[in-house]
Every structure is written in C-alpha cells, then in structure tokens.
Amino acid sequence: MHQLFQLVLGQRDLSRAGDLFSLDDAEIEDCLSQALEEIKTISCHPDYVTNDNDQAVVEICITRITTAIRETSSMERHGSALVALWESCLEHNLQPQGKDEDTPHAKIASDITSCILQNYNRAPMMALAVPVAVRFLRQGNRELSRNMSSYLSLAAIAKAELLVQHTQAIIISVLGGNSMLLRVLPSVYPLEPDPIHQHIQDLVLMIPDLDQTSRQHLLRLLQMISDRHPQVLTCLVPSLIDHLSDASSSDALLAVLVNIAKVSPASLSPFLPALRTVGQQTPGLLGHVAKIYGAVGLTSETL
Image (tube, one colour):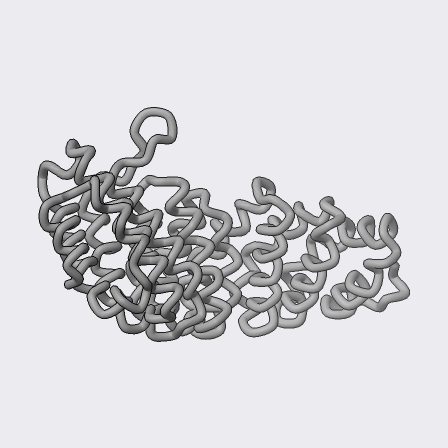
C-alpha cells in the first residue's frame, strides 16, 4: 500500500488525509484494493460509530479511492474489494438517526453506491453488485433504497438475467411501496414469469396509488402478460374494468382485456354494458370494445 495511505489509515491521521488528493491517480491505483480492505477493518470495529476522527478519515479515503477508480477506469480490478466494503455495511445500522441523518455506515454505503451507479453497464461489476443491491432494499433507509432502485433499473436494461433470481425480492419491495422498481418487472418477466403471476393481483391493486410513470410500467407488464399468458389475468377482469375510468390508462387496459377475452370470453360477458358505455363516451376506444364483443359471440353492430 502507498506510504501515505499506510500513514492515514494505519494511524488514522486525519491531518494528512487531505494530502491523498495531491497524489496522481496512477500513483495509487495499484493499492486501492488494499486500502479498501483496511477501511473495511476500520469501519467494522465496534468503536467506529462513535469515533468522529475515524469516520472523517474513512470518508476522505473513500472519496479519494472512488475518484481514482473512476479516473483510471479500474473498476473491474478493484470491484471485488469495493463491493466487499459495501456489503459489510449491511451488518450495521443503516436507518436514519434523527431528522434524515445518515448513520456512519449508511454514509459509506451511499458513497460507494454513487461510484457503482456510474459503472452500471459493466457486466462483471453488475454480477458482483446486483445481489448486494437487492439486500439494501430491505434496510429501512429510503435514500439508499431509492439509489438501489435506480441501479437495479439500469441493470435490468443492460443485463436483465442478473436480476432473475431476485424477482421475488423485487416484487416484495414494490408491494412495500417502492413503486420505482416496477420498471424492472417488464425486463425480468420473460425470464421469470411465475413470481409475477403469483403477485399480479396485489400489483394491480396498487394502480390508484401510482404516479403516471409507475402506472405506465405496470400497464406494460400487464400487456406482456396478456400477450403471453392471458389466462393468468381472468380473475382480474373486474378490477381492470374499474380502472377504465382513467383516460390515461383506458386504451392500454382495453388492449389487455381484448387478449383476455380471446381465451376467456365468459369472464368479460358480465361487463359488456360497462364496455358499451366506455365505447360511447370515447369513440377512439370502440375498436377495442368491438373486439371484446366479438370474442364473446356478439357482432360489432350490437354497439
């Protein structure tokens, strides 16, 4: 390890910590993993949470290390040590103290998360980080959970298969109020549909409480299910009909209902009068309504 890192971390010398920024990134790149391992030792000590000096040293060193990793493009080389320190934070209290005041280990986790977010599209790093990011969702820290949700959403776009084994945990987080993760579910659904099928009824119950963006992600998921396994949604027909009053969702929901009607026309039969009203009030939706009427054995002229 570089002599200055040895001094700052070995002796917890806060007075010299700022000097680390005078060193060239290339000069310290070789020892970044060692420095991260030493930081992990310091931060896992029982006295760390009450030692302001050690916390300040660690905070400065992490900033210097993550800057060097970024500037030298050496995330793959030091990713294991970085994630190991990140994961060690899970063994400590991460819930905010007082008014939105992060605990010492939540601060470490947040700083590392920022670095990892910048490298979301690096497959080797994602393989290390995704399982740990999922664990952070359950730690009761809203800001960390939001950042992890952003990371997982980006990871789902770049490499959805890494999230497949975590589908159940992601759904539980969504049902717990983390609607941001709804954007992940359409990406993992083709690879792991069963957990989503099992919880789709609870997910649909969230529709009235979702913002427009989250609602669109859920509607996309419903469309995908209706394209592949429409029979899964037959029990949800009454709920989907109820939500047709929302103009921003009605077109997508009717498209889902058309697919359901093809495999289970009887499930739509009791709702033909309501669908007729929808078509009369919004002529642009008549095409969908006519298809549903046709599926249940009536002609479009009935409208």
